[in-house]
Each structure stands twice: as structure tokens, then as C-alpha cells.
Amino acid sequence: MRRMPVLRRLPLGDLDRLVSRSRLRRFRAGECLIEEGRRGDEVFLIVEGHVSVHRQLSKREQSVIATRSEGDWVGEMALIEDLPRSASVSAESDAQVLSIPRDAFLEVVTGNSAAAVDLLRAVSARLRESGAAQLEILRGKNELLLKSNRRLSRENRLLRGELD
Image (tube, rainbow, N blue to C red; front, top):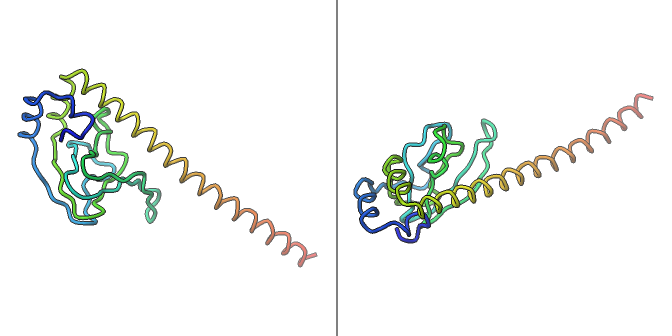
């Protein structure tokens, strides 16, 4: 737990209190830890395995924003704002995670100014990472639209030539 930036500055007593209010959970590969659109009521510390963070682009299409592994945590975005989750998290492999209740995490972390600053840094880094991933997706979609537009323009010219 000391590997997590937000938790490494916590006094051992606070860390013990946080762990005592948490529970260990197991997820099989493909299982959903966090569902997009639902309220964030817990934070997960990945003890073992890998997870992917993804957003639903359409009913059939989703985009992987990031991957997380042992010693990392997911669900932090819901700590700052009390809004529905903006992304889903699924286990890429069998995973074991420590499920930390949102209120317990906020109580312990915000009671320690160094940990609170680390939390804000981590959240802002994740926002930048998420924004970069979304920009990459948009670039790909823009390239696809440009190619389709060129193809349709060529097709249109050919059809007009045949009609003339």
C-alpha cells in the first residue's frame, strides 16, 4: 500500500484505519469493477492483476483510455466530484483489489495535507491522460472521415461523369 502516491505519506495509524474499513475483492478477467454512469462509492487499490479504463463511444464501440496494474488505484475521479462515473473499469486478467469506501478514503486522505496534495496531483494527471486519449480517438475518427470524404468525392465525380 505504501507504493500508492496518495497513501505513502499517511501515518501508519491512518493507513491501518483505512485498511480496516476496506475489503479484499477478486474479479475474473472480463468482469466489471466500475460501471460508467453509476455513482462512485468506492476506490480500488489493485493488489494483483491488470485492469483497463474505458469509455463507451457508441452502443457497439468503446475506447481504452488507460491500463492500471499492481500498486495503482482506480476510481479516484469520483472522489473530487459527486457525479456518475465517466468511464468503466474492467479486469484484463484475474485481479485482486482492495475496495476502499469513498467516505473512508476521503476522511483519511483529506485529514493529511500532504496526502491531499498528492491526491490532487494524481487526479490532474489522470485528467490530462484521459484528455490525451480522447484527442487520439478524435484524431483517428477525423482521419477516417477525411478518407471517407475523399472516397465519396471521387465516387461523386465518377458518377457525374457517367451521367454527363
